[in-house]
Length: 187
Image (cartoon, rainbow, N blue to C red; front, side, top):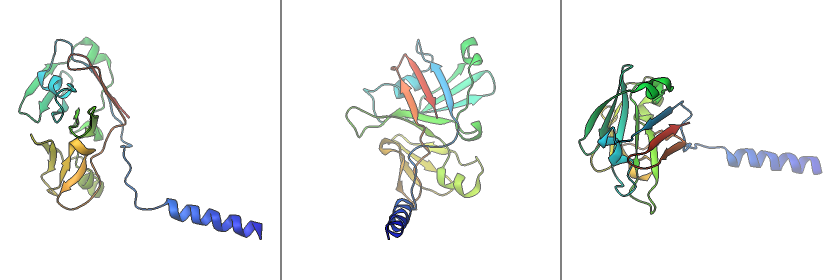
């Protein structure tokens, strides 16, 4: 009798713990460290400032020699990779294709620092192709031109408009030491 009771409890635990669960963090590889001393990028500095929540910056590579930083407020910087940058491994999101998006959300106090993949998670999940780059908007949302979902970057990247679905792919380790400091994103 005791054996059957344990078996039933194990089955209950199995069936109640499984379900259609969205995981908070991406399983994709991401590794990026950038020293923004100077600052080297004003677009990135604005997103790394905890006193300016709601500003987000897309980071992409332009070949072996440049990084491109584009904020949702219209700033764009193309920064030459220095000798230290060239020694570091760089993996910016899914297949290193569309980059990552970083910034402080404006819903919490103190503000939460986020790092997202800039790939639409739902289109990527359906096709496994890295060609669905999100457009970042000045209101702190990111929008997919293909499925037309809007994601709220201030609120963990949840779908805020359009068909439901998975939130933006978020990277586990996102840290900054401030606007003229170091940005570190990894998974």
